[in-house]
Image (cartoon, rainbow, N blue to C red; front, side):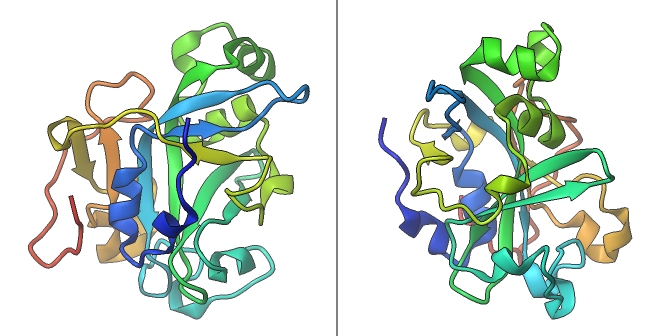
Length: 212
């Protein structure tokens, strides 16, 4: 299948990128080079300096989040709660620290390896959350800073998801972000069992810049 062009990730419209990734195929080859992949079913957009939920809010720049200031198409992986990793895609031009968090994928290839890594045979529990999918795909901090144009991780075209099948709502677990917690920057495929936590939908406010 065709890999997504790196140009897609250089747009400044991060919510539109997050929405467009639904139905695309995340590919992370296994230790023997075998394909391990899953269809992206849930994403969240984080809009950098002006977004209270973003690691770069207010222009914060640390060793951990430095890669978010790179040109779009890089991978940002961080360790959270001392328990699990989360996979993010850097978007926009340089010094524009926006990212898209991949929250859920539906397994497609390499499912036996995913089960081994997750120590479970429960199919519906393999990748239905950002921490779960990182374990299933073997994603850790060694992926931080990698390019999606490289050999360790990339995204391919897979399925076209119609606007009618896409739900939009507020992001999860960011109550500390004040009014930004209610921004409609979470996107998921309606009815997919690998969405982490379905919630009541909302539509973008008139002043939200989301291209659908």
